[in-house]
Image (cartoon, rainbow, N blue to C red; front, side, top):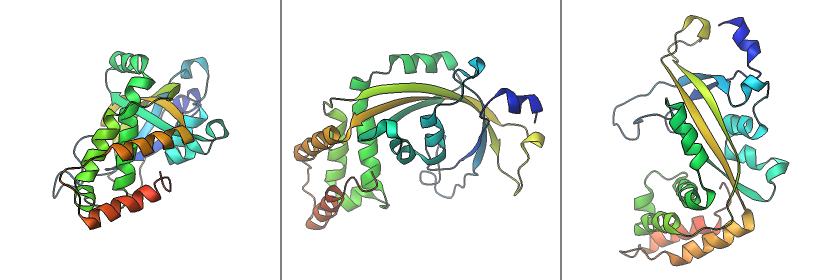
Length: 231
């Protein structure tokens, strides 16, 4: 790889995007029976304010390396839940407009519903079967709820070059990228106690039909009782 590229970009990182991760693109194994997706290595080749000599913010580096949990561990977000909205593609101008028009008040319900869905789906292969009609009703209620208190903290973008990992030892200097795009991130936070109180209101507003079985209700209650463990 061009030696100048390594030093002109303060943080040139390589990551692997696998099926089921936040960076999955297109149908993955769970949606296409018999389909196996190779892991995709990507290099960050540019990012917001790189041309001004700045480094990537800590929250971006932490999210790339360890996800939401690592961002929430930062002192800056103590006592707050972190939500990161993402959009990616090849049209930089369109993505820039998406980030510019992102509205924490209007767009937060989707972020909250997605994270609630992930929490109930954790360790469960078929949430609709485990929780019955409660699961769909919960996600719909969370998406339609009027959440308050969401704060837009920051936004950022990175440019990525993708590679197919076909060899046990990968040498990006000898492999041509198979794809390139931009990924935009918007960081949103909410006070933990405020989120919890609104989530409880969402739980009370869920009226599933048909009524879940006793086993399904018990399964949902177990998650609700320990909702913030692993959230």
